Image 1 (cartoon, helix red, strand yellow):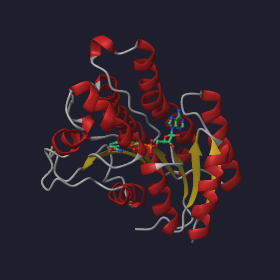
Image 2 (cartoon, rainbow, N blue to C red):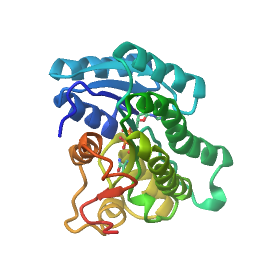
Image 3 (cartoon, rainbow, N blue to C red):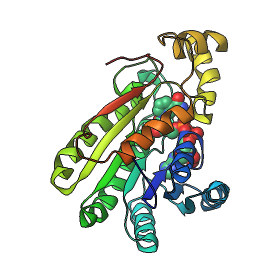
Image 4 (cartoon, rainbow, N blue to C red):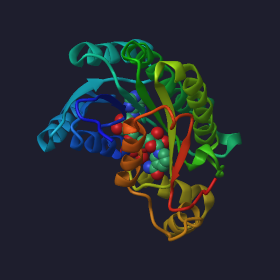
Length: 260
Ligand code: NAD
């Protein structure tokens, strides 16, 4: 399996999991657009990853909730490099509150980044994939695409929703060689998770150590965090898989936290 010279767009690639996926693709010789909120940060990550090679990266300013920015960003990548082969819709945030205290504005903000972001980026990339007769769309789901946890109503709703959107795109894309799949990671130590540890300790009235050992890793087979590199390997598999046989799927990478 090969990604050499493939044109890839990874959203939320200035940090955490997205950055590791971009690095993995570049290590395989791909051309990767680092799409994130701030152009300066995206460009500086792109420069660091290009220096590692053998592939190359560019930075693209993109708020995935803004249709005009998504369309402009995807169009500029397609024009510069000649199409789009792989989309990883990865940008995401976390906000935790019990349902009765969840500010409606925060609910809408979270759903917009995860769901509108996946929809808008897919919508913009699919025509480019259709014209090539192939493409791979990857959504960053979560074990929370299959499980629920207290305080995470918006996140769990969004991550479950991504399974539905991926399955529809898999069906619509089949005759065009366009595949759609979802990666479902367990807890990964990124800024998104580091912020949650004190927040959850305060909301649940337990220590930070208990949040890690009980809430985050309690159901794993070995009490280990999943790593960004683990998730990036799955993202490589979904991107480079050579046929439509692997489509409409969701794959857990979670140290056995969820086995469905
Ligand atoms: P992170 O905070 O390290 O990175 C998220 C990136 O998304 C940041 O670079 C941020 O600037 C970007 N972003 C946020 N809003 C955006 C927007 N509107 N438009 C474009 N970019 C935006 O987080 P992470 O842990 O790497 O999370 C990446 C994805 O992985 C998210 O979808 C998250 O839900 C998912 N995920 C994370 C974990 C985990 O444990 N860290 C587990 C399962 C799934």
